[in-house]
Image 1: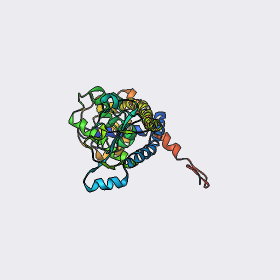
Image 2 (image 1 turned 90 degrees about the vertical axis):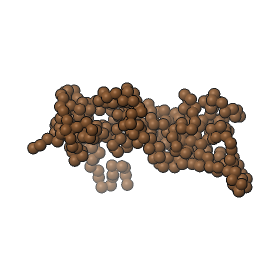
Image 3 (image 1 turned 45 degrees about the vertical axis):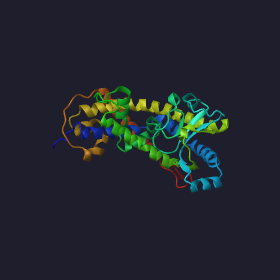
Image 4 (image 1 turned 60 degrees about the vertical axis):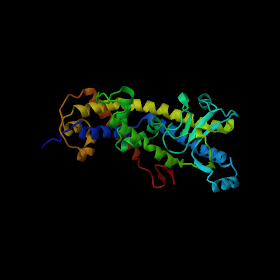
Length: 319
């Protein structure tokens, strides 16, 4: 029977992406802790929305806004600079102060119109790294090569050792797909907030909105919880990256799909997508062992999920 040959441009990338998707499914202490941290982070959002809505909606009486709108003297605003002091200084040092925070609900990109310097005290829009930490499993399940993006960002090379910069077209395309999850974050949490305010010659990040220390602490909690997500994500990513190295060696060294399937039987699930030719190298026994152990852990997890329960009790608890 003819072998299904592999190539670098089509078939191997399919396998690299599928490996990322499968590794992300492997049971992990850090994955569980990351999911818990994400839920705690998301739980801070409703209170932030409540504070912003209450603060901005009550800045100007509605009757005044009605009059101003007749003369085209109002505008829609989705970004806000909040501070818990009476200092309305718009200098960079004031904007970077820990008593201030920037809230952007326009879904137009993290730090796009405003820069708090190294403090990065922004809520609403998420950075590329934030999005990866929250949505990594969903991204790789949709075929986004997040590991290649991370490799290039961290090392200036992809996982095959090819020198690439973050401005390489392929890497930029991956980043664009990652950043598209900003819209998902906004949709999932109903964050596309906009308010009618008096028209001003100053941009939103030059007008300080005064809040209390207690209200600012809610924004701080959002940032603290996001940092916790990152701590758990980095632990999980380092764990997955070590496993991915074994899969990448297998894919890179195999001339045909059959050689991959001999070690990694799950690869047959993407057989229908794969075509092409390639060249063979040698696979180390260490990589083979890592892959087989990783598959075994997924199979064990699947078996554990399929627990038999009594008619009066479900796997999710009592009816």
